[in-house]
Length: 253
Image (cartoon, rainbow, N blue to C red; front, side, top):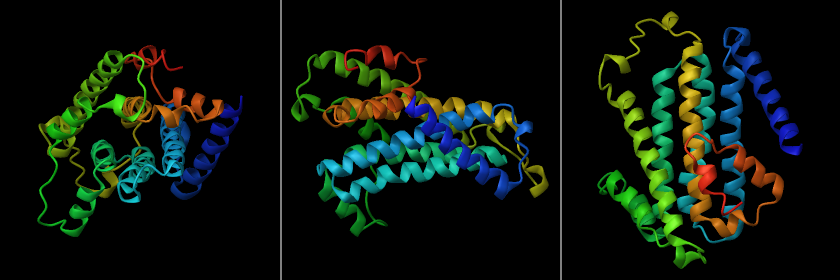
């Protein structure tokens, strides 16, 4: 299928880049290919959304910086995880969560975005609790016709619950909540490729991709319906079945 061929081409480019620039023996990382598969689906799905959101003309350019920054984060996470940087990978992933929440808020509040840009140092930071409540209370039926608003809202609550759980896990790495979240790499030679990092990180990347793509569909259903079937399949591939989001989205696809 087209998406399989396209994904393979993208993966081959990344493998060539990694092996050429970092001289890594991929045989020492048994979970590398699963990790790469999840990471590349997330990045490609983000770029599909970004192109359509910009073409729609409905999203101010300023808030779109937050959305596009997520792809930048994920590109860096892809490399950081492979070369053995565990904590920076998780910090970048939590940053991606925050970038996305900021995007969802500022896309409908462009004046607040530009006020913030004018006074970055002294501005009041948007609180995570406020942003999550904003998403939960979002009036989807004002933006487009929703067949069953209660089902829509129920899925959004489920997504936010998973979102909150992941944020709590990632915050442990940011704050060093206990010794389990320390790396204690005293010397550069202590930093080595480690398959266990990929095993853990691919799970969090899969969760993040599921959260982001499910939320995008709920917020931008009219735009999603403009995707061609190949693009829709790529989006669906980026949503895991583990959280039942796919089952709950069955009324859409």
